[in-house]
Every structure is written in C-alpha cells, then in structure tokens.
Amino acid sequence: MTTPAPDPFETLFERGVTDGLPVVPPTRERVEAMVAGSGREADELIALVPPNFGRATVEKIAINAVMAGCRPDYLPVVIAGVEAMSEDAFDLHGVSATTNFHSPLFIVNGPARAALDINCGRGAFGPGWRANATIGRALRLIVANVGGASARTMSMSTMAHPGRYTYCMGENEEESPWESLAVEHGFGADESTVAAFAAEAPHGVYDHQSRRAKDVLITISHSLAVISNHRSTHHGDTLVVLSPEHAKMIAGEGWGKAEMRQFLWERLRTRVRDLIPGVDGGEGLPARVLAKFPHPESDDTLIPKFREPGNLKFLVAGGTAGRFSAVIPGWTFPKMSRLVIKAVHMP
Image (cartoon, rainbow, N blue to C red):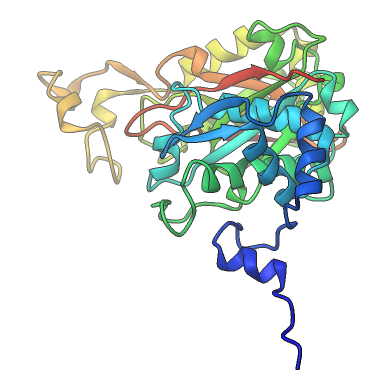
C-alpha cells in the first residue's frame, strides 16, 4: 500500500509557522515570483526584526508574504512595513512582549492604495479586501517567524485582540479635507508610504446629532478620556480616525489638525486632587508622581492625558455614510511606541 504524501497544510501547522489559520505553501516558484515583485535581490537585508533580531531578507519576507496569500505586487508595501516596525522608535520588542492588548497597525498612504486596491473606505478595518488582509497578515507572520514573537512562544498579552491576525488599512485621502497622515509627516502627496502604529482595536465613537465641530470634538474627547482607564495620564501616540462625515463637518468650520489637537489636549487634563488613588474609584497617579506635590489632596495642577498635543494623530477613513469615528489607543506603558512611517519603493 502506497504511503500518502504529507499534507503540506498540516506540515506547516506542525512546523509552527502559521497564525492558526491555513497558509499557502511557499513553493520555490511562488517565492521567486514574489521576490520578483519587489524588484530587489533575494538576499538583500531589509531589517533585523525584534525581539530576536531575525534577518529579514527580501526572500524571507517573500516566503511569509506567500504564506499570507499576497500577490507579488504587494511585496514593496510589505517591505516598507517591515522597515517601519523594525525602527527603534516603534519598539517592536516591547509591543510583542507586553501584557497589554496591542498589535502593529499598518496604514497605507499615497498612490499604492489605488494601485493595489487597498480599502480606505466603507469597512476599512473589516474583511473582504485581499490587499488589506494579506499585507497585514504577512507582516504579522514576519513578526512571528522572523522576529520570533509567535503567540505560543513569545506573546505575553493578557488578552490581545483580533488585529494580531491582520491589521492593515488605507487612509481615505480623497474624502479628507486635510493633508494626509503621510504628508503631515513630511512625505510628498505623490509618494506611497506605510505607517506602523502599535494599536489596540478601534474604539467606536458615535455622534449622529451634533452639527457643530466643537460638539463632535467634545464627544471624541470623552472617548479619549477613558483610554486605559478614566484616570490614566501621560499617554503617547494615539490615533483619531475620523469618518468623512465628521471630518467635513469639523473642517467646514475652519478647524485644522493643529486646532483639533490643541483643543483635545487642553480639554483632556485633570487636577492632581482628582487623581489620588482611591478617590472617585480605581487607579490614580503613581506614588512617585504624587510625591512631587506637597499637598496633592488640594492641588489644582492640571495633569495631561497625553504627554504632548503632538501625540494625537488624525486621519480620515471609512465610508461616506455614517457619523461614526474611532479612537485607537497606542502602546504607552511602561515605554512608548512612536508612529513610524516609511516610503514604499515600487519597482
């Protein structure tokens, strides 16, 4: 009796290189075609991926992109994502090992969105789009298989969230009344970029009734106020994802990103006396911070929710119908991951 050939899907599960879902077997032909899509040499070193500082060559990136189901023309975006999340400022080691929820979110700007059919509009964080699903998944597989931070061997997250399967979207630049996230950070409008942001899941903000910019921003401020908990302070980079309807209403009254940032930062400050542990429930300022105030129980010094106004990052995404926006907390404690943007080099 002939012994059946090993099932390649089961073999890859057994080798521990999947994310719990089936992956495409990375045959030599598929990997070579994927490498060709980058226009680069297979052995070119792109980055050392934390936490194990694995060598992410073009070929290794291509292998994981094949397994994720990417098309070869997606590979330049995946490569830029690897570069972004491997930067020291992003701190992939901390993001991978934390007990917190976070996972890298990848945001695509520029012409690559249309060229690769990356969803920026209706259902931007949801399923149904091959580019979003497979680019984000490839980058997560690279974190596990090249960086060594697999869910079973490295992740210490108490709960994690579904974005650890795949977390990739594009900014809806065509519906934005402001310059894009990438342009705001110094890139040209005709450049394609990928931003890496250490993100929790999106937290929905509903405001169907407000018809003034200030009122919508006050609603958003209350959602930002409860990030981590209602008394946490000194947060770092955080995303505010505005729907086109909310964005146009706010911009229609002359508000730009700088004005929104300053308004929200000033509003999201709390008196020291209201941040003493146990007062009004739960956590408060750490003892080392309270020690700086001689009489904290009566001190009206304002402590900011965010370390600086610049920690509030804005982009526009989602469909044109629906007054829903979102806030996405970043990874702040015990260190701080910063949003990092890299250019996509198309062949």
